[in-house]
Length: 528
Ligand code: G4P
Image 1 (cartoon, rainbow, N blue to C red):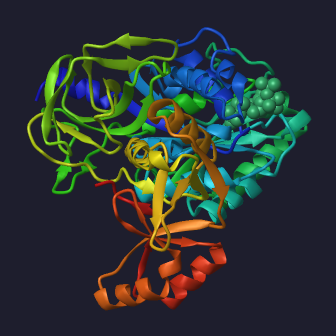
Image 2: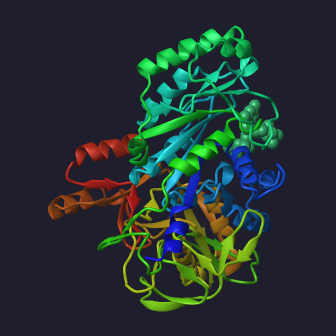
Image 3: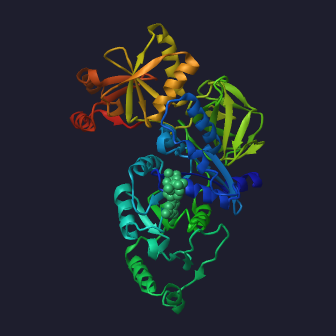
């Protein structure tokens, strides 16, 4: 095995941030990029958010997406590690992409607002991480403000997210009384200074908290720290690397992203502990990143910013082997070879052409709609990666076609947009309409705008009373037939003809699941 290849592989860290809007993801991203030297000043990533849009104006969407293309993958180097941070869109642009990005990472960083604890979007994203036992590192943010007690936050995480917490640092006070953190792992005391620097501030090594220097530095709060640490030693879970790597334990850090406090420690621990690229499952075998032959899969597709050009960028995560410009690979679904000549790697600010990339890296491939979400690319074999599914939508709309003569274009447009992962559609077994399903409501605006711009289809939405969708299967054919007969009015086929149950409320869904124990209800569907 080529030594440089192994070195390159082992220094890759590919991750995403899971958080609820406003917890501090953007601020933390910015600080991480500053440490990585990828940006010089705060504000660069934030500028992206300038247009928190809620409009269906096509150009606005395009403009916003144009900017988000460059921030979809942020690559930086830190302490000799090559870090790829994949953006998990939040706020209004929360969509199925957000979930799917998490299928392309090797680990995740969870940011929690200390005043709010675990919030709904974090819970949803965590569910996706759990599907693959993704290792999660936790950063409790905004300690410069008054929030919940650290123990309550840990209890909240353990209860709501069903993951064991192992604190590696511990805060000393909070809000106005916030004095800093004690690193339990390195036994170092870090004192808080507001508006902190990116420059490395060494903590003070305190091996024994009885050390009188602790009193000098913390005055009356020294006792609090001693009590807390004593309590933790008895009650907290000790950190175990293998439990973290299995996704059953999360190491926890405390800090304040905006003050740049605790971020460096977090990043140091992250590059050391977070896993390099892992083996991935295909329909027939596991593919190890060390295999010399190239392989990868598309997890996100971005339409071009310029509506005059129909080309798209497919974001491909490299799973094994080395990518070299111009290499020929086999696109399994299509059954044809493709030449990867026009690949791009995404930097924080800019897109630059690359000649080489390694497992864990993301390359962008330009195409004209020939690549679908979940497509696999192999240099030598014809395999298909699994685990890049569709996720059950939470929002629904019925499409009303303004001009019935455009029915064919509508179907074509919806089929292509579904393949791209922009939206999902369902055809109810009763009636002749299309129901669109999305994880984030902005997907509806984008779909409508693109149907008009790219397929010349004028359509409108009508509200529908669906609250949840589940793909249904059963090993028992008789049960399935009975279910289909009984639930006919609530059943639909998706864009690939798979059977789905559309429930008008979560209560009804639960009811159906209880009533039909022989039927399996799935929240995800593997892409064929
Ligand atoms: P997001 O991407 O997760 O949505 O969060 P973002 O970083 O935008 O942060 C949300 C708000 O929280 C921002 O304030 C940000 O300045 C603030 N924030 C982030 N980290 C900290 C922290 O450590 N302490 C405190 N006190 N606040 C923090 P905003 O008023 O919404 O935006 P802005 O006007 O500051 O840009």
